[in-house]
Length: 372
Image 1 (tube, rainbow, N blue to C red):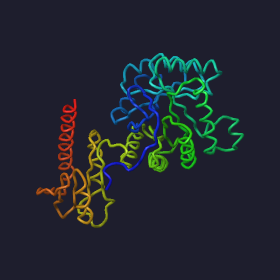
Image 2: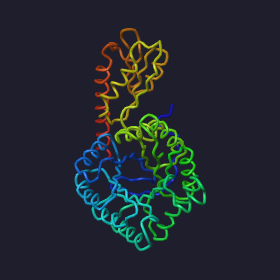
Image 3: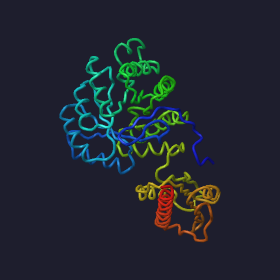
Image 4: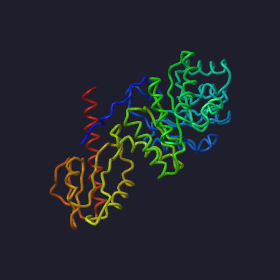
């Protein structure tokens, strides 16, 4: 069983979004986007903080108007996570949020006006060390590209992306990342594969407008999983018609499954069958809900019988193997003498998991001090 990911990541240059590195071998970052009215400062700040609480590395905020830009000024003062400002068409909004401390400008250079306006935004970004994100979407390609290809294709998305890339290259600005999103998995994956061969800038991954919580999570996992398994991708957003907090959770789960990044508990649980000696499903669901605050990476196996239980438990930080009335407990792969009452599993496991997390955190702190 792999303890580290066997994936070899694509080499890319590194940019900084606030204090968060993106690309260049840095951990793949997980981001989401607020869906509150940006002019409602209190609601937007509250949502950003809820995203921070579940581990968001970066948060994007839409800035459609000058009023929203003024609200952003106040929002920025109240949060710590780096903020990407989403801007379309009006270059003056980009200049204003750059002045107010945006950590990244999400613009498409070719869509914000003539060369002088583009240059003004780029020079402001350069002066303030703000990177740019070029965001191409299969649903909003330029009219001439739509006419040329008649429908969105990977080549069409690539051509649109390279058009914007060329503008920044001609202005000698290289601090940018690029996305080529589409709601169709094969379209998005094909476009990212082409783009990955053309540039060395960081790539922002996403299957846009993926759908609701269940279907969107599946579609995103398939599409992003294909790309990430090939080493493509430096930052990602899971786009769901759901609470943005769920986007962060699913994003980390995707990275966790590929061993590209670990945050929190990786539950290894059987789908349950007639061999189970306790209610596996309710036990896992209860523990996931109770332990959302745990950020320490660890593997916890919860298996309802003795067929697969011991094998999983011996390679987990903590393991539970179902047995009649009392189930076996493993710690660091070693079977313990104590056994857990099947009717008190959730409470007993939560106690042991929290204790293990505290020990791991303390060990890491000591290790850091020794290095310093």
